[in-house]
Length: 113
Length: 115
Image 1 (tube, rainbow over the protein chains, first blue to last red):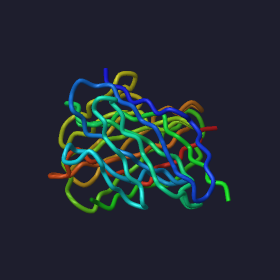
Image 2 (cartoon, helix red, strand yellow; image 1 turned 45 degrees about the vertical axis):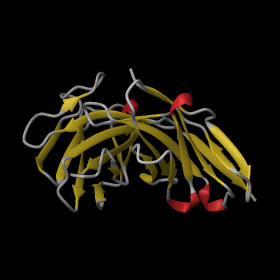
Image 3 (cartoon, rainbow over the protein chains, first blue to last red; image 1 turned 90 degrees about the horizontal axis):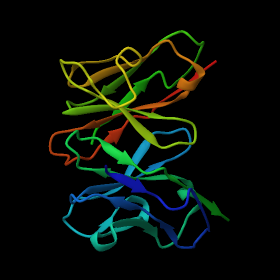
Image 4 (cartoon, rainbow over the protein chains, first blue to last red; image 1 turned 60 degrees about the horizontal axis):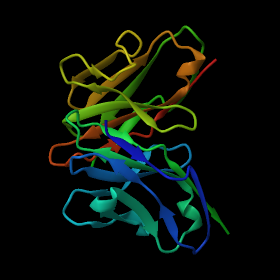
C-alpha cells in the first residue's frame, strides 16, 4: 500500500532562516505529489504539485520542492522563513485508481522572531 | 480551481444526534471526496461521493454512520449519524475538476464537537 512519511511532526526555525520540510513516499508507480498548507482554523490550501513535467516545482509564497525518484523524496523548502509561514504542512500522494490522496501525518512549522 | 463552501463552518452537538454537512462548489466537478481530520491528526478519506449513485466508502467507514449524497455535479452532503464524542473532528470536502490532473481543492472544513 502507498504511504507518505513526513519526518518531524514539528519544525521550528527563526525568521529569515531556511525552511526544510521532509517528505518520502513509497510507491512503484510514478506519482503525483502535492504539498498543502493548513493555517489555523482553515482548510487546506495547495502550495505546489509535482506531475512529472519538472523535478523542481515552484509553488506559492516562495516555496519549492524537488522530486528525487532515487530517494523517493519530495522535500519542501523556502530560502527565508516569514512569520506568516507558521502553519501545518501536509505532503500527499495521488495517482491511485480511486483518485483520492494519501496524506502524511503533517509537519507543524513554527517561526521564531 | 474552484470556490468551495461548506455549511456549517462549526457546530457543537449532543451525542446521539445527527448532523448534515453541505459542500457546494461554484463549478461542475468530476469528483468529490469527504475527509476526516481528527484532532492533531492528518486527513483520512471517508468516501468518494458519486453523482447519482451510492458513495464509495473506505475501510472503516460505513454508509449507516456516514450517509453521503451527491445529487449533481456541484453539491454533496455528508451526514454524521448517531454521534459520539469520538466523532469530534474537522470534516473536509474536496473536489477534482476535468483537466485538473489529480489536483484536489479543499473546502474550509466543518469543525464538529460532540458532547
